Image (cartoon, rainbow, N blue to C red):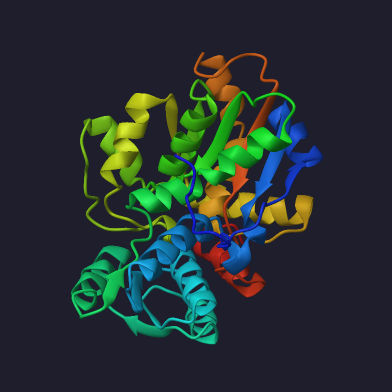
Length: 327
């Protein structure tokens, strides 16, 4: 279903660039296109779905948004609220960096810290959303969020001469996966396999697939805090039944190393959540999946969703490298 905005109402996201990467194509052994969601307003793909949900909530008369987020979704909600001239409260877990908190405050958001992980912050956000006139802006588990994210696939179809042989993306709560699956179904590309990357310690989607049901991780131990939902949306599991979704778990060190390599190769600094997807290329996962018969040989082209980089600075990359033993 295409996004139905009111007359004269424009979405808050941009049509992001789609560029061929020669360095990534070389390491992957196939043509790699980068869908550069890191250049979206507020720094990630999240503005597509969050923006859509916020615009609809405002039309329904809600006058205060509340969003639980360790980073990207909160920044998207704060950006959308600013565009709409409405107040927003972002509830973050204590692991959220001061850089992110400062960015949220610069966008005019009120920031409240609650709990150790996103799930704790979400409980508090849902309590606040009971206030008269307030509304919860869920970071990943809402049909309008998925609908907004689906616009990414329409842009791919508009830009590419032929459809790609695979799409690579990261899974946190499952919102991007749900949106991409919705988009593939809209444009008739539902036969394209999706390779879904997570870091170990934030691998709630992988655990759910293995169990055949939603699983709640005991804790989030990965450095990729933006992937830190203990339990994915139920829709993510449904997506794996409707399309070919290949789950891959990478180590924190692989994700952080991919962030550094990508910075050298493409001069863009992204966060470890995005590094998880890039690690599929840098660590030879595509070739392994081809050898296993899970991806076609040869691959004509693949698209990697460069999901975001708003929550990282160079000093943080250096600290992460030390944390995962790369220095």
